[in-house]
Image 1: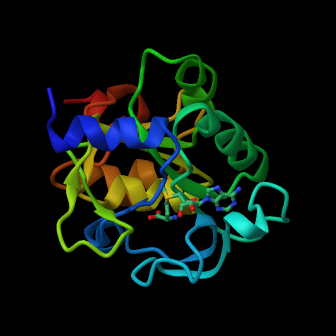
Image 2: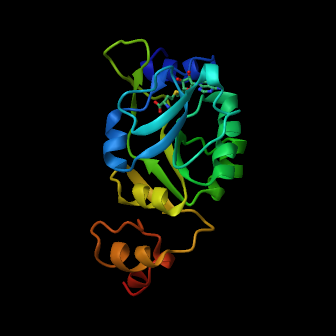
Length: 198
Ligand SMILES: C[S@@+](CC[C@H](N)C(=O)[O-])C[C@H]1O[C@@H](n2cnc3c(N)ncnc32)[C@H](O)[C@@H]1O
């Protein structure tokens, strides 16, 4: 089995994190970020973040500010970066939807909202090659804070679910949920008075 997808995921596990989030993800999120704390030197040009940290800065050791975009180095490192985002409380993380891992069971329930990405993302290689590579696993976006959760809910990237401890916001109950088509509560019936009557 030598598909690009499998090699892609193995590349991360073996230590290469130089695969970048495709631009259409940011078009769909329609939200700007203050910080990308895990970035290549110079940042990724299409990522709408005002500031970035690269490996030489060690983004985990630096202060985080504002709204954070996080596509962390994968493998064993993922959970350390995610815990930092949980602590920070404002941002979106893009990770593999690995529901068989310890970090998923520990951290997915802490999110304000989750979006299970439809299909497979094609990540952009950092070595300048023009071809993107299909990820070897499905992707998950985890949002912290209501602005980021709303960005996931209103994107067309996949299945949105509010975090288990998230109270439905007034906005979610009325403007977003009652008339939106397709409904942003994605069948989560108890979150939406309009839909409990369906
Ligand atoms: C999966 S890529 C994501 C890049 C970009 N943020 C994105 O969304 O496309 C992870 C990036 O984190 C960088 N990185 C690895 N360790 C880091 C560290 N300790 N501090 C900051 N950046 C780091 C890697 O060099 C790589 O560019």
